Image 1: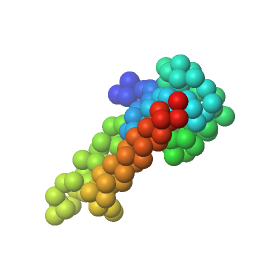
Image 2 (image 1 turned 90 degrees about the vertical axis):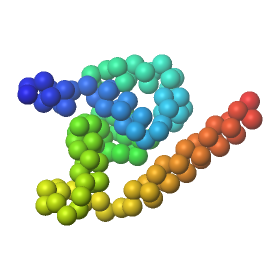
Image 3 (image 1 turned 135 degrees about the vertical axis):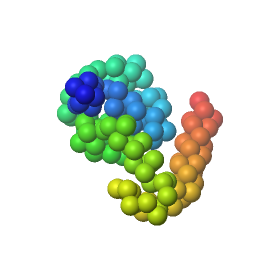
Length: 126
């Protein structure tokens, strides 16, 4: 049990990486937004600790708070998703779905399209 508590408190870099992946953001994009190299982002994601000022900047680009990154727990996220789609007649649902999951899929798809369009524009300008 100590291992899961320890891992949820530590390694901010892995949490940044996971949130970035979930949000569909590439290291390159994050690097451009922060004005650093992709290698710097890679090093940050390999770091157990990240300076608060850097964490704030990263959180801003990822669209979350620094506190959300610090408290991120992937297991908790998957538990919420799993409980969201269970039978609503059961009384064990701790989390109720307050949004239409298809709307979220469409929203993510639209973000992906916008990102691809932006990438294509950047490639055209080179």
